[in-house]
Length: 148
Image (cartoon, rainbow, N blue to C red; front, top):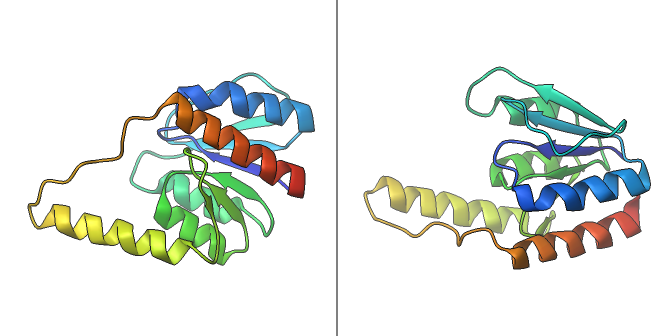
């Protein structure tokens, strides 16, 4: 299993959590973004900078990912593409996307986007918190215990 990180907007609170897991398990990891994003120094991490542009990092991740790989992303359309390739995805708040739930998340995301495009003001997600980082750490640990 390889680990991919959608580096665009990756929360700083998660970097030490992820780095410890990478080092502990020796996980081959790719951090993909349209600018240099560092989660730390490790012989197990490769940093890939893609062209600037919407979804360029997503396209690169989908191109590289294989069945059984894990991707950390908050991008629901990307998670949907990954699930269709039999890969796994965890978001920054610890949600494990799966065949059973990804279409529901995608439908809700699309509905909210449609509401915003109609001019309605909506609240965004709550600010990222220490509790979110804890939920992510727990989900990552459960996943890696099962699959790594």
